[in-house]
Length: 331
Length: 290
Ligand SMILES: Nc1ncnc2c1ncn2[C@@H]1O[C@H](COP(=O)(O)OP(=O)(O)OP(=O)(O)O)[C@@H](O)[C@H]1O
Ligand SMILES: [Mg+2]
Image: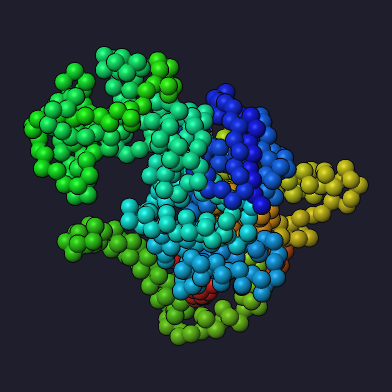
């Protein structure tokens, strides 16, 4: 069991308030991702849950029990750090066994747990190596191994994949998702990469300057962003925002159209010239200068024969236009 | 910087320094070696002749030799034990956030800047004097018979003085090492359930191993040749209680004017230093590998 509840959590460093007031509920077994731009307080929030930082105000509950004043070790949570924080002088086996050793677990249980974790994480052949003799992905798995042997109530991950190269990141993303399916333990995962957030999460918390902008499933955030910030943050390439006369015709201060929600036609609503065309094979990204609107990004699937300087005519898909009021809230 | 060209250039540029250092070392060493096989007493100039191993035989036969050897090892071992343990504790203390940290650190380091002769005199006259020293005053406050440090526990007194001088060095090196410990590692250990004591033994101490090794090796080199503190305070006595090898050699060459015998002693000291160094490197040297 591992539900986590934050009630009116506030955190300031000295006089600087980093998190003004956050209330949040993570259900047992859920995979929740905190996502937001750099410096928005994701790590701080995670460290508050872990107990590595003291709360300035508010309450944190784990399984309903107030843990606001409890030491990190007694919260029964495991954390995987961005730097992995492996113990360099211990072997992989020593690292994974360390939490059990601190619990003074019997030797047989320790060995069994280490071997299980190593099997799940494909580390069996590396158990006697030191962390410095491992690759980045293997170190990452050791850190996860150390986290799972304690059978914690929840896992906390702080940008665990940011030191890995792109291919490995996709791999590890899958492995962590599979691990979650297998263990069914609550996971709280911090990232600034919205692709990671979208692919892994059951629910996503979008943070901005220490405030929750929206909390919902990936598809909810994609289909019904609550405001301009979420709309701009979720989705890649970024949503196009159009203000002024065009927006007025839709009765909004700003309208947003995702790059994938255009059709390219012969006599569309807008015409413009192609600035840059990026051909990825599966998709084509066009950066189009539209008269009277500015640059819009268009994503078309498949290979399209457009090049710099060509004239193009576009139609937004009417049903997929997002409308925002003057305060930036969705209408 | 690993192309052949840069390596050759580096060697060329280093060679003057290396040659100078080599000459600096090899000339006195070979002269000492030469004298150690000579019958050579300054009271009988011009009467030098080759005596083979006689000087060595006399040196080893001298009953003070074994006392001096033991004293040297006890002195080095005692000071190392105090400075390594004390230095680790001091470093842990100074690493805590506290008011006036900068000043406190500076004060802790300062004994290292005091000359050995001066610190020995200060200890002898202000701290350990049986009549007006601070320790005897404290003893009297508690109604205890004050100890006459230099006659009752002479070697221990010397160890205290030398340890006081070297403690700041150990503290400083260990403090820097401590500060390089990754904060996330401590936090991870904390979350893994390690309290302060397991944290120290499983995380901090292994992290300090390399620095401890370096402190140990450097100190050993200097401690094998302690002289000033003994010269100023006890003069090697009472009896031979505080005579170490350096001091024994001094007594023989400058008080008995026997250069040949003293040189033999010098060579023995060099060999001893090498044995100790090899021994230490065998035990702790693996900590120095990256
Ligand atoms: N110990 C601290 N003392 C003072 N300010 C801090 C401290 N830790 C974090 N902050 C501030 O709190 C804010 C949030 O930091 P936090 O590390 O949570 O950001 P983040 O969302 O994790 O960013 P990133 O994606 O770059 O890791 C930042 O403005 C940072 O400067
Ligand atoms: Mg962070």
